[in-house]
Length: 440
Picture 1 (cartoon, rainbow, N blue to C red):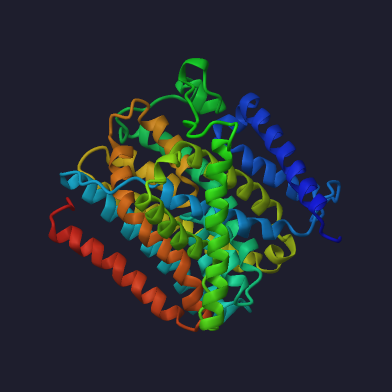
Picture 2: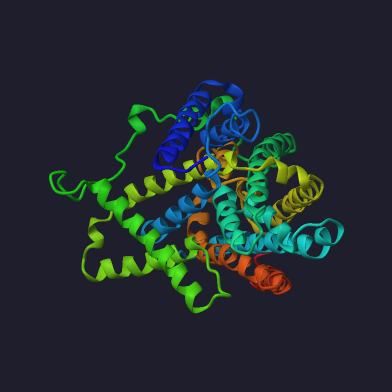
């Protein structure tokens, strides 16, 4: 199929229709509500089944895989403008949450890298970086899966995006299915403190539709529409930053051909510079964080839908056995870490904080929040408050993992990446022990 601007319109239009259908199903179908399945995932799975990969009923193009790379660049372009300023909050509770989450993230990436490098690639004809599809999909989600896929494609590992997207999809399903079972198990054994039945959850959490009294503005307008619409201004800034990231990638490739940085990483760097310049000239006051936050959310919804729809089932089928082993080992060891370490490092509400981390480490942040709302409907554990402060220090490390892992494995230094992750995770846990954060 020859790609034209109309091809893009057809692809976006079909996926938009499926997103609306997914939203309708989420608001009406009980089983979908019970498992908190996001409409974007429903849209992606529907497009995959009805698209050219399976039934061929929908005229979707073969270019859908490239959309994910563009969308993740736009998402990363928003981050410098939407991130909160670092604040200091006293007490060891936030420190425990940081250590617990940061060490777990590093060790999950180390596990995936080690399995692919020293086990799976020696038993099956897979790339040494094969194992990174698990942490990219689990802890990172579909956004990171798209980023990893784009980066590894530049090193000739074209199958990474399909594998990581598959891992992310399996992770979302496992996070809820296993998470709901864990909540039932914990409630039966007195592990929970504030348990809430699914039927008692607020309607907006079950259906995803806010009632009129809980709806709020999506952002303040800085300009009169007679000159330039505020939405146009905010989107233009993000599109400019993404273009700058693309340009920076090309410049770096010209200067250092061996250093192939992904567009999303360079877009993040350009965004930091642009934000700083706008602050100097007092133009940052026209940026609306709520609007950019919603734009980032919209990019992410389409990213998930297009990412899942572009999964190449032939690749998944070719690597199904090592992929199943990788995902199974990842789920089991993540489960052990989350609950064994969580029970020892959190002094209060350890089950609630662990079930939240399980949802995050295997699915998405939304999955973690959904599980937390069942175990802590009134937010009495303070889990999200602790996490919000802790994530200010986790985010740079997460971005570094996503950006540097393809460079390391593409340069034959996968062993160094795994070693650094292991030492980093173990060092944080040792630091926690020295601080007295662990209990018997």
